[in-house]
Length: 357
Image (tube, rainbow, N blue to C red; front, side, top):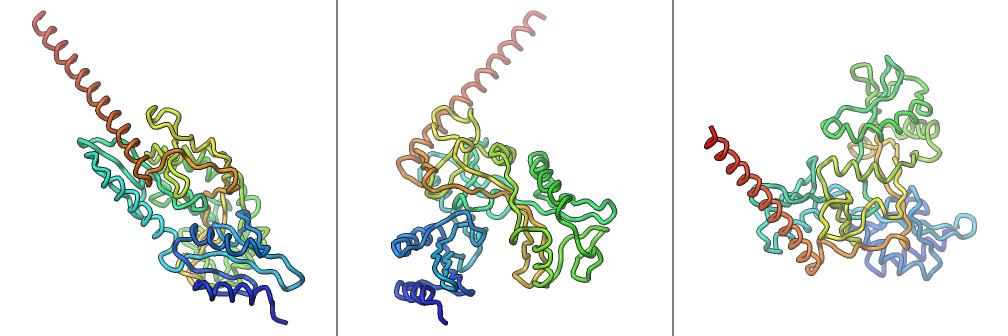
C-alpha cells in the first residue's frame, strides 16, 4: 500500500519546483542554500502537521517529520545539490570579504579558501587588525580531525595530518575525549579483515563495503555515529588558537571569541550562547559512498532555534559594517600611536645616555 503522506509531500514539492530524491520514506530536497531552504520548507509543511527538530542524525540542518500510522511516516531533510559544505563555506567567506572591501576603509582583506587558518584576515599598514571565522550556520562542522588504530599498542590515536599538527595544542583535549571513548567501545571483530587499510601497523581506514560499514556501526554506535558532549570554551579556544578574534555566523551575526578583543565592538560572547557542543565520531566516506571510509571526529553543535538570539552587529549588514570598521580603524590608529610614542621615548632615552657618556 502506497504511503499517502509521502505522495502528498512529493506533490507539494513538485508544484513548488523543488528538486528532490526519495529514499524509502525520506525525502531529500536538493538546494545549495540549505538554511534558507529549510526555513521555506518549515513554512510550507509545519501547517500540515510536520514538526521540525535539530536533534536528528539525518541532517545537520534538522529534519521535518510527520508521524502517522504504520508505514505512513515521512521525513523531509535538505541536502546540497552541488559543491558540498566546504564549497558553501568558501562562498560565504568570499561574500563577507567582498562586503568588507566595499566598505572603503583602507583595509586589506585576505581569505583562506579551503586552506587551514583564519577565514578572513583584515590588515592595514602591513599589520593584522583582526581575524574572523565564518560559518554558514550553527549546523556546520566547527572543525574536525581523524583517528587511527595502532595494532602494536592496541590503542586509538590521532592521525597526524598537517591541520592536526598545526593546532595540536588546542585539539589535544578534544582528541583525548574521543580517544578514551574509542578505546573502550571501538573494537574490530578482526584486525586483519580484508576491508581494512593498514599502513605502518595502523588501521587508517576501510574500503568500499557498505555491509562492512554497517557491521562496525552496529558494534560501535547506537545508530550511525556517536555523540560526546564537550565544553563550549573548547570551541572558543580552538578558534582563538587559529588566530581568530570573532566568529561571523550567517543569519545570526558577529560574536566575540574573547572578553577583551575590542571594547568598541560590543557584541555577544560566543560561549555565552545557549549551545550544546559535542564531538561526533562517525565513519566518513572520503570519495563518495564507494571510496575509503575514515574514522572522523567532527566538532558539532546542537541548539534550539528559539533560544539563540541574533547578535546586534553583523559583517553582512551595511550599517553594522560601518560601525565595526570605524572601531577597528580607531583601534589600529591608537595602537600605531602607542608604538610611535614608545619608539620616540626609546630614541630620546638613547640620546640622553650618549650625552652623559
